[in-house]
Amino acid sequence: MKNDIDRLNPPTLKSLQFDGFPEYHSGVLGKNIPCYTFENNSSGVVKLDLAIPTGSWHQQKPLQASTTARMLSEGTKSMNAFAIAEAIDFNGAHIDIGASHHYINLSIYAVYDKLLSMLPLIQSILTEPSFPENEMKTLLANNKQDFAISSRKVMGIARRVFPAFLFGENHPYGKILKESDFDNLAAEDLFDFYKQISFQESKAYLSGHVDGNVMSELDKLFANPIFVAKESFIESSFNIEEATEKRHYIEVAEAVQSAIVFGVPVVGRKHEDFPLLMLANTILGGYFGSRLMKSIREEKGLTYGISSGISTKPYSAHLSIQTEVKAETTSIAVDEIFKEISRLSTKPVSNEELNTARNYLFGHFLRSMDGPFQLSDRLQTVHPEGLLPEIYYSNYWNKAVSATPDDILNTVRKYLIPENMHVLIVGKDK
Image (cartoon, rainbow, N blue to C red):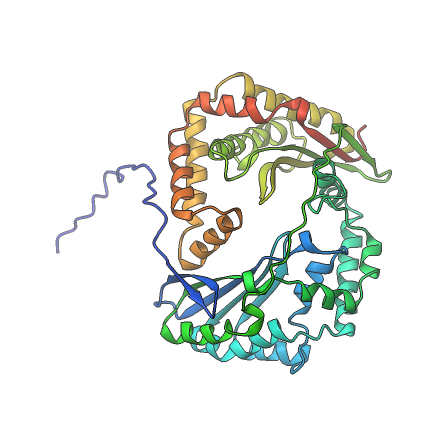
């Protein structure tokens, strides 16, 4: 038998390729619910995601949106929390319900035939929640305990407080949660919030084993009156009130470490510079081989880890840098972070460094599209910002492919201006 494998020479290296966002099916369920489908019937598993455009942006009290979302599966008019949990476990399914600033998201994974049998349960959860007070108190008590533990950690405090400096405490993105908020929520608040949920403006996402039976049964589910068009909820607008001071310090007397958070407003996905900004962020602190990791962790030994990232929301985006250091090295670490930002803005990166970061970014990009479930997630990433995936992802890739060292230099100079950066230290700065 002839052996065609060449064991003497390694395979030829090839550049990573992106052939465009894969095709998917768009349709309508019920009367007017858009549905986006990625089919792969070889696995036998199906995932249903429902994005309901009502979140903490629309709440009148802290925790109202997140608690309402979590409590949907804790009791209905026909089933208590135990019966719901038992039905989910019996069918080997997984249901997750949570809330973000702008959405309540329901996700269910199940084997094909089990999903069909669970649709009446999903309908009950969405259309007739009872919000039992005992379960709500237990949920809030557990969350309050987690909050109290987090509030004793310097980074927990920093992450909770920092957004207020970028957006203001009156903005939904900048609200600072307090321990007392867990005691001020009642079951009536959940019923009030539920009444304003915009079910009729939901989007459904299907991935995996999808056939005519699934579509037919879901069509019946979304024909329920709560999904039929009614008067749209008017979304409130909020002014961003960025803090005028750029240096912030919260003392924690007993802390042996300090949390350091840098942050600056940047452009989001809709802007043509976003791919370049993502690439610049990768070089700065977006992966283990980044400049911040090499300088602050490996060369100077000031921290176990440091990273930077870009957080995007429909109405805003910001870049942040986060780390924890010994209290006595806080000032040194802050200075060194500024030095790395300055170095990135004064001298172009080498082609080797740019290509390494670009390959890392592309690898992450391609892994995030490996399979129908991940592709469905990519749709849900861009839809809230009104972007078309077949245009956005190709533009993103092409812009990053053609990026030069001068592009990175100009992007850093344009957006990572040290004078515009907020710096928060929680712990001790000496």
